[in-house]
Image 1: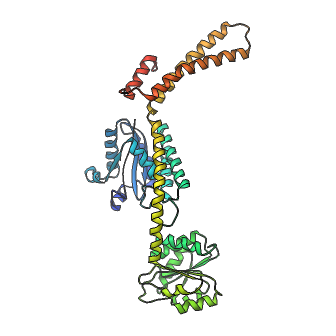
Image 2: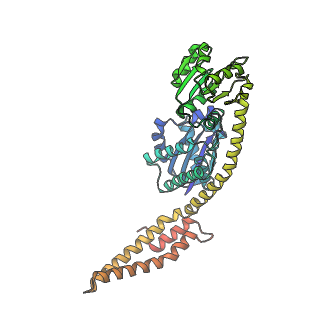
Image 3: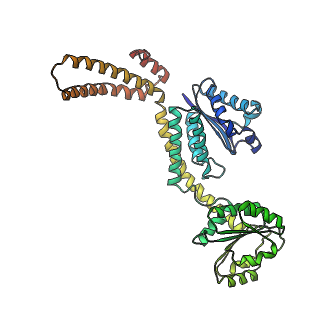
Length: 421
């Protein structure tokens, strides 16, 4: 038995190719069942996200299995294989196991340490279980992958520290204020980056959100999208007095917020802190604002510096995570080496146990007048003898004799003990 993974990711295929390859969720059940019907494929899981489309399969023969999966992907997505193959990668057992563990632990993600991928792998596995396309091998494989990913999250800081400009702004806000739940946010401009920052702040439970834009219709549209209140530019200074966090991203050629404006605001606010996030280029907020006590201003370069520092920290944590993944994969592979032998070992033990039980029953029938306790002692004795006799052969079977293929070893054991009968 071999474990293979065949697929594409953000590293190997452009977004337009990945879009064409994605398996719609409503069709996953059908495709999972079609996959498992392919010759030589015993188990299968389809992982389909915006950044990767991968098929994990347990196959009898590596090369035939990989070719089968490649043809399946091309046929099911209606793309000629010769145009698709340049983007595809394929890994066999050892590399496939480690790849799955790295993917689940967000070490192979576009943003290292992102949290979504583990949930996406779990969803793919749940679909496969629902479709009955996984069995004991993949049960063990994916459960081990989830266990390793959990260790990576809990034992390293790979998921900590903001690595997007919008989220970095929120992380800084959390350091400035004890809590964000009672804070008022103002968006100046309706840019995409300010929207993302606002969404992060909303997820932290901010009290209220205002949106101001030169074009009121755009302000209204953004406010409706985020559950906030739209303001005209004329109302800006009036509402800034009650605002704690300001995110500005306009196309203005000059400063929208000047130092003198903020000095007035702070005085009216009785020195309550204000946090300005200026992600506009050219800048919307006068840099001298930062000189005012209890006013904190970060521009796009400041935020980018935070992100770069956090990325370097994540890279350091990723090294620790790689060690956890390597050890976890090695543990699984040590069990996998004997996986094909397990059914044969179980069959051997079952046959010997059947013989033991039959002979014990005959013997006890001939022994008259012995107590139940004495019968239990005799039963325990025979069980102990069987276990001791089978212990060394079982250990040696798992070690495997050098130069003998597992398939040949299984045939010999079955022939010696008539296990197929």
